[in-house]
Length: 347
Image (cartoon, rainbow, N blue to C red; front, side, top):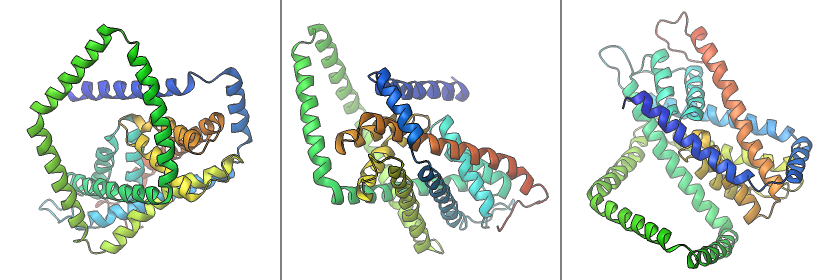
């Protein structure tokens, strides 16, 4: 199977998962609920959505600045590539194009932005891919720190809800299991046993993967210490996630029902939504909405209609921003690099 067909099949599979999650979200929404959702969407204060978009654009700009710090140490090669700091505009446009590509196929963006910047800045593609790997490692670390902060600020609230909801779900599932068809039960047991056996047979491969991941993780963190401006790099890394938090928080003011929620509450919703974004579905579609709605309804008791509306506003507004900036980037990159033989820009 060639790589193109494999990518198409992956896209169809993951998109199907996202659509399936959307179906699970909307299948219980009644005609009256749809009317209320439309009213909520029409009455929302979109000033805050506009502010959220500006904050989102600034977070992408910070990511571009941080990426430049990682690219600068790439040594020059014999063919003249590398050994220079790329221009801000070229880097920013490459980041945006990468984000846009991720809406088409998860993880395609990392390759896309490296390819775009390599073309216009004459920097080694392999070297750029290495910097993106380090970026992902640092993002994972900062996300974990924000997750710990969420637990510190909201542990009792989140734990109580998860315990109560989890107990109710387990009880309902147990009632279902007691009345399940024996044939289905046998199939489930066989599948579980087969899964455990498969994992046991692959244990060496799995352990090797874990060891490699830990090695790369520690190596990525260590490489930041070799940068010319490591403190600025860490500042950008934390600031990017603070912008993510703020762009979500200000959208709470779109509705009176969510305007009372705090930054700590926004952090909880952000963590739920982040797990949706990193899910292997295009742009996190379906997974993001499901997790954000779940957090708002089950933890903060926001109505289903308002939770549904704000989840789609958050996801949809960022999609519009990325597509708009991505198309503009595709348009202006050839123009700003037209008469530049080296592709280097300092603005």
